[in-house]
Length: 169
Image (cartoon, rainbow, N blue to C red; front, side):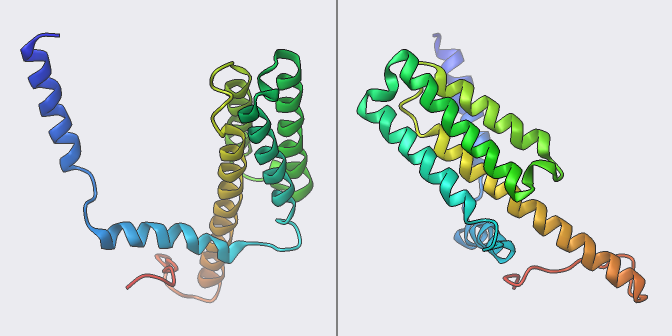
């Protein structure tokens, strides 16, 4: 690589770093916003995600130990964990909500990555469950906000009504 290319790459990196958030307050608000999604946790149905998370963790541990790296056994274990995730999405009704294609795509892509030897050592299956659960909570948040907005419009409030998160300063 030539010196000019290195200088160009360094300049691009500096530009990217300028756009990154450096304020701890903004980072804290971002994290608080994500944690505020737990307000939409439904204990009667969402405990099933614990089963999916347990299956994913068990599968990732089996991969790490080496048993999951055996060609036939590893593939079967990966498929069983993915089927468990699909079953939980189906039972909780998350499979039929908005952005279902994104959730199914996450599971399919994660399963495809897990089948590839060498990448199966990464905890991809666990990340899949976390992402799908996050998307489910985010869908509930959006549904609640839409219901609040519709209720506000029905009672004659402003059409520009936007509920503010509880953590906003």
